[in-house]
Image (cartoon, rainbow, N blue to C red):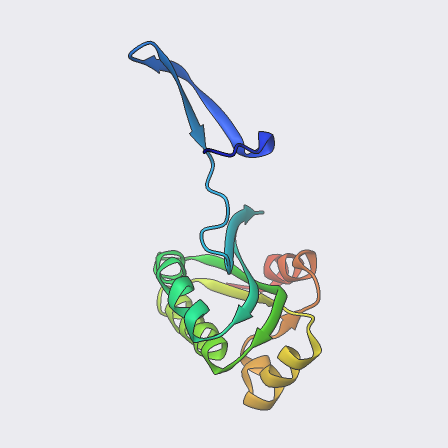
Length: 145
């Protein structure tokens, strides 16, 4: 049974064999990741528990986005409930890939325990977290490339 959410369905003009073709926008890529565009940046929204299993689901999408020359990426951790060393590896990996391609990476994070992990490991100095997506995008607009 197909479930259609009206805000997520788009129709293409045209038919195939007399049938109307309905193209559905991708909903979450995984239960731990949603991707969307905002002000010229690709925003990767991580969700739920980011552990080794989640990291294995996320890494192919992360690699695709961060491997582009001049990639402009925001990692949004506001919906993360648990974050372990696998999540840290994702952030370090993303940062290295974006920098290697001459891109820009920004971080959104509000969870106190995740912020503590970022501070303790020193990642907060390399990738300063912002409290909102708007704050991260404003920082991105004012930071020189």
